Amino acid sequence: MSEPAEFELLELAVPYALDAVTDAERADIERQLAAAPGPDAEAFRIQVAEARETLGTLADATAVPPPAALRDAVLHGNRSQISEHRWRNAVLAAAAVLAVGGSAFAAGWLLRPPPAPPVAEQVMTAPDVRSVSTSLRSGGTATVVYSRERGDGMVVFDGVAPPPPGMAYQVWLMKDGVPVSSGPAMRDARTVMVPDIGRATALGVTVEPVSRATDALPGDMVGRVVLP
Image 1 (tube, rainbow, N blue to C red):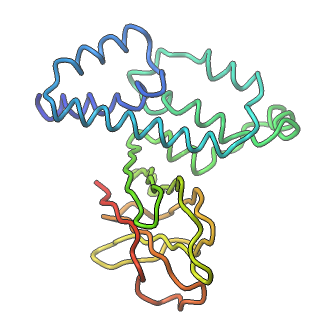
Image 2 (cartoon, rainbow, N blue to C red):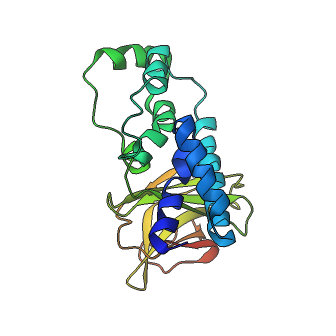
C-alpha cells in the first residue's frame, strides 16, 4: 500500500473504533483493511485498540451518565460530515462523557449558551489527534493523547499504583534534546493535561522526591514514549 493510502486507513481507525461511521463506510474500511499489507493492518488494529482503551478509561473516571438531551444530540447528529471531519465525529461520545459532571449541573449547562470546549475535548476533536501508550516499570500504563496542531495533550494513567511514601510522579517533555517538566508532581496517577506539547519529541514519567528542587534533572524514569 502506498504511504497516502496507509495514512488514510490509519486516519479511519478512531472513527471505526467508536462506531462513528455508517454501515457503508464501515464495510469500505473493512475491505481496505482486508486488502492492506500485514504491517498496515496491524497498525490499524493497534490504533483501534488504543482508541477504545483510552476513551474507556476516560469514561470509567466519570460515574454520572450524560443527560438524555445531550445523548440524543450525539447519537442523532449529522453524519454527512464524517468524511470531512472524521476525528470530530469519532470523539463525540467521549466529549459527552467529559462535558457533564452531574444532573444538576447538566440542567443549568443545557440552558446556557455553550461555553468554549474544554482543552481535553479540543485535543480529542483536533483533526491531527494521535495516541501512543507505554507500560510503566512501576506497573500500569500511560497513554498520551495529543495534537501538534493544538499544541496540547493529556496523559491517561491506568492501573498505576501510588508512588512510595515521600515520592511523586512527574511528567517530562523532551524538547530540543532537553527534558522539561510539565505540570506539578502528582501523588496520585490520574488524567493530567500536558500543555505546550507541540515541539516535544518524547514524553517520560519519573518518580521524584516530593521536595525536589524545581530545576532538578529527571530522576528515576519509569516510562517513556516517543511522540511521532
